[in-house]
Length: 296
Image (cartoon, rainbow, N blue to C red; front, side):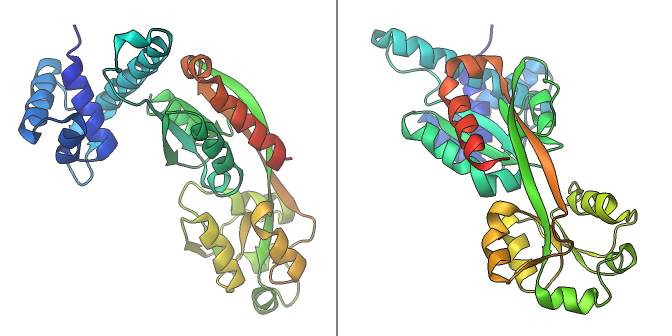
């Protein structure tokens, strides 16, 4: 038998980031929260919470949080059909979603806002590279993801979203300084690039496809979608930017394409747990509608 008071405590700690905030959210004392978690961890013989600032879930703790989330979805549906039962045990439902930073910075937020406008459901959005967000689904950390993976993760439905188009851009001054003889593989190997993080391979993919450049050159590390645009405008480096963020700068001449017309398309998919798809079809409807408006 699952001790739901302890399971809810674990989920609240992970959601809020601390034992104290979880205690306040559940209207109990911090010592009561701590005792519930300790007893459950002793019973399971496993650590569920990584103590820190903030507190996070271990792999087994994440699975427990996912279960609490799914129970909340079922309760939410039941209370809608049988309102006399009272308030759900687990409180408002929070859906964990993984999205790549460029989608979040361009087309995804209108979908999220449209869904939450008419729903009591809360969203917890995690950011990762589109080639890695499906891993969050496999590990049970999220119930839906924007991903580049077309093959469905176990228990999920897949909907194609379209292609997010990127342009390799830099400031005119940067191009004049680093490519006086034109953009070649050799010159690109010396010119500073902009890279989101170690998972970001877009710049190298574009260089390989467009110029046959195999070796990555020097790079600035900049984990910010808007920061990429700002850094390019200021002449720090060249990078792949979504067309939605740079089309105005390209039209005004503040940015130029390294190789005109040489774009890179990333095909995206919406993978969502079948339970969430059934319980909250409006979420998928809004995501697909926003993608139709913004993606190729």
